[in-house]
Amino acid sequence: MSFSPFVTTSFNQKRPFDYTYLTPVYDNTTDDDGNLVNAGDILYYQENYSGNKDSLGINVGAALTFTFPLDQRFQNACLKSATTQEKIQAQILSKERLNYELARLKNCGELKIKGIEYASNSIYHKLCEDVIVKPVKNQVLPHTHNLKK
Image (cartoon, rainbow, N blue to C red; front, side, top):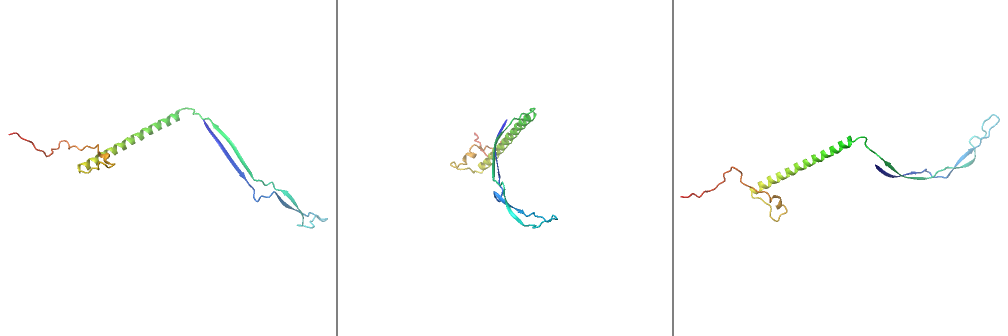
């Protein structure tokens, strides 16, 4: 169901705004042959009401629409598509989060091996504080043994 109230306006105007106008009344006197005697002579001017008025119209109303699907196919397809899209977005977000964490681990580890760290009072110190650098597996580190004689 949809309810839509509305208000519309219209404004009409006529310019120049004259209530009356003058129309010339010509002399129609003819001779015996039917020819005009005083052609073009104006006897007088007749005053005519023009009817010019500005008008403003305001219309107020509402529309109430009822809609109902004849079957559920399109609604179900739309919901399925929206659910699929949400899953895709969640997967993309998970992938980007994993990429961020792997890049953070790699960069922090390389910097720790080189002896580069943030100061403990830096706001960025927490970025790398959970990264632990361990010796590479199957690597023989320089070491010594105490042998008994």
